[in-house]
Amino acid sequence: MWSKSFSKKVSSVRVQDLWKVWSDVNQWHTWQTDLDFARLEGPFVAGNSFLLRPKGGPEIKIQLLSVQENREFTDLTRFPLARMYGAHEFLEQDGELEIKTTISIEGPLAFLWRKLVAEDVANSLPAQTEALVDRVRNG
Image 1: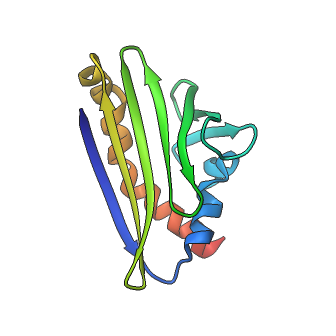
Image 2: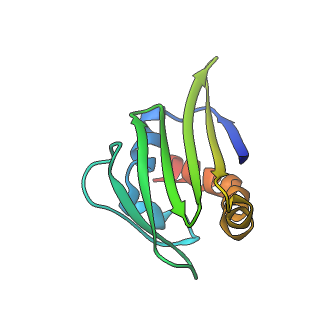
């Protein structure tokens, strides 16, 4: 299994406000410039899936594996003979809030999907995290 994490500590941001933005999948394209759209029908809960299309890419179905409001969610993207996970966490300690995302991929063709998709997703995490914080701070 391959994985890569990015984390950023922030202050003056409430976890509830971050969660409100993160869990509103249908608005992701308004703050993530690399998306054409993301669409979730139904609530942001484990077991539901959403469709996402990166700019210049195909439409992808992503399943929510676990969701703990204001704490974490993990999603799963299935590829032929590989699975990519996105673990998104909010960790509060000492008056600061850490936003941490880990992308991991496993399976017989993980090496291929790592090169085709997972590395780009992981490399976009700093910009995505900044955009999330900016969206919360600036509306």
